[in-house]
Length: 129
View 1: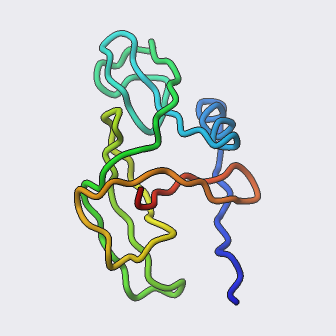
View 2: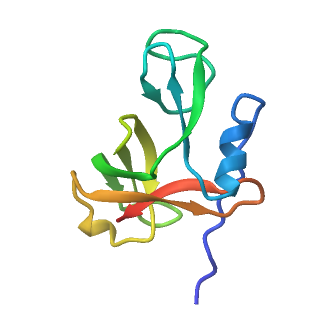
């Protein structure tokens, strides 16, 4: 039996600390601008749409659909897939797809967030719903 994949701990800073703290509790957070109403990811203090600093944390559902992906078959660590997921709340997230048959991934497929442990905060990835 092979040992579990080891993921690197994320680098945190004061602006992203709330995101990583919530990840430790199994919650996937995004930011929403109260000035223009747009949700955005990666969470940051300034809205990327209207440049307002009136942003608030919001727990995302963790559900979305695959917008696009790429399957890497040749890698020192073995095959893997990366791509973009469009969250139900609107923002797109670049991610790896885990815990699935990579050959069965499809654009438009429903996916959900899963957290993988590290030596720090857990990292969010997506898997078929």
